[in-house]
Every structure is written in C-alpha cells, then in structure tokens.
Image 1 (spheres, one colour):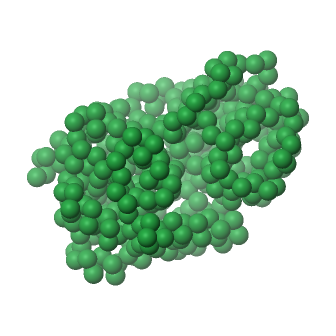
Image 2 (image 1 turned 120 degrees about the vertical axis):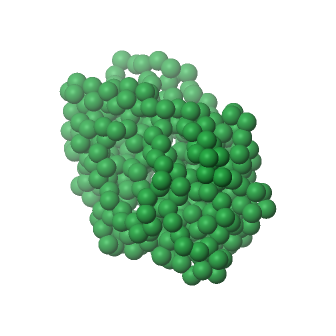
Image 3 (image 1 turned 90 degrees about the vertical axis):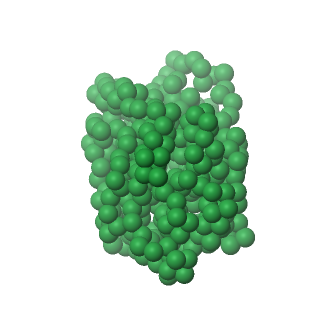
Length: 392
C-alpha cells in the first residue's frame, strides 16, 4: 500500500500521525508526507520523506492570522459555537485552498492508495475525492469529523477539480480513550466513516536529548509547564510568568518548555526553582514529573494521560483545547482554569490539589492503563490495509 499522509503546515497537527506512518513503514508499506513549513520539518526529523505542498502559496499565513484572532478573542468561546466554526472554517479552508492543487497532483503522480489526514485538514478529503483514492480520517484527540465549515469554503475548488460529491472518509482512526468524555459536537453533512478503528495514542513529541536530571526526582515536586510553540497561547509569556510565581509559592521545581516562542512578558531572569528549556521530549520527561500545566492541546493532554500525570489546563477560548480541558476535568484527572482569570493564586490552588490529593493522580493512572490496552498503531495499520484491499 502507498499511504500519503498530510496535515496543515503546523507541527502539532502532524505529530499524531507520525507513529502511524512509522508503523506503515515497518509493515512494508510506502509512506510519503505532503505538507510544508514546520510540519514538513517535523516529518523529515522523524525520518519520513516529504513532498512540498503549500510553500510557494504561503499556506501557513492564514493559520498565523487565526492565532492572532484567537489572541484578540475574536474566535468565539467554545470550539463548536457559531463564531468559532466560522472563523476556523475560513482559516482552515484558506490554508487548504493554498495546498489543494499540489495535494491532488502528488496523490495522482505518486499513485497513493489512501490519503491519511486529521479532520481539520479538510483539503485532504477533497484531494482524495479529486484523485480517486481512499481517505483515512486520523484522530488526534477529541474525535472530529472532517471539518464541515472548511469543506464549505473549499466547495468552489472541489467543483473546479471535478471532485464530485464529497462523502466522509472511508475509515476513521479514533485515539480518544473510551473513559474520556467528548464535549465537542461539530456538525457534519457528509455522512460518517464506514469503518471506525480505535488506536492507542502514539505520543510522538519529536526527538531530542533527555537531560540527566530528568531521569531522577529531587526533594520537591516537579511540575512541567508547556503551551506549545505559539506565543499567543501564553499571552506572550504572561501566563508563564504567573505559573513561575505560582510554583515558587508552592515550593516546587518548574520545568518551563518555551519552544521557539517569542515571550516578551516572561522575565529574562528566572528564579532558581525554574529550569527553562526550549524543547524536551514531553512523554519521556513526564515519567519524572508530578503534574503538568498546559494549554489544553490534544497532543499534550493525551501524552500527559499516557504518562499518568494529573493536569491543569488553561485553554484559549474558541479552540478544541477548551473541550480537551473539560475532558480532563470530567475524568477527575485535573482542573480547568480560565485564561483571563488564571493568576498565580489560582494556579497555586490547582497545583496544590493535583499534588496533595490522591484522586487526580489515581484517575490519571487509570487512564494511562486504559490507553496502554488500546490497539497499537502496528495492529491498526494492518486493519486499515485489509479494509482498503477488500474495498478494491
């Protein structure tokens, strides 16, 4: 089988697909990744072959404009409210429009048997229908259909390419543990996948060196803070500044993962209890940690659950991060804080509960065991291949 993996030019969108791509390669299938920008660099660093889709058209730009709109609180409150759907549909649709022609060309010329994509990358489904190949909807957290508002935006392009009727992907891979509630209901008008396969989340967080100190525990609790690589998710570092203050009052060690974000509101000189790091592989780091504070990103949430670590989430309104955080709280494994009211006192209060009360750690450990029992990517990719062969 020839599997064409694709995502928007965003690292966090590509990461959940990497373990499945590795499993396909290990099983003897051929894999190509069609994307650009940070996602392409992530794929290449993971040892995957890429084909460029979107660089010359500036496909990343609409996504960066979306992040700015989120920071200005112009993208709604919940991920499925009308404003959020409209804003995200326009942004994701435009990213896809700038990638679409090249996706179709790559799928056709390479002879892809299936295109594998996260649901928010609706252009991938249009490309599959235009190229006459199968589509595999790959979950990355909360199960979402192929994003309808972006499909609506892409409708003129689909007609131009002769894509015909856009029906939902043939196969869905769902990585959400069954005990986690889904708080987002995105409407769909294109039906449901014929086959749904559950799969263990792969926890690919990029490669890198794990510091020696991360292999042992100190005399005080260790807390991780990470809000991804977008400065807007931390209000240019103001959120990290509050977390630094909160953990100082708590008497905990703080590992601060800042990625490459420009954070002008984070003090240049940090107190002794803070270990600032640009990037450390998160899943491996969490084995030596007691709690995590994060932005509610799907990969961060599921990597934390896989490690059995309780969580405090401070999500940006209008994103799926809100429903991710609600899932954590509903499971009893953490707490949700309002980003507009998450001062040091509230962060300290939340972390005190996570570190002192045994219940959130117990819920997190139970979810970790549940995830470990889910089918591995190697098993799932062979089921996908069998279904595709049967369909042909």
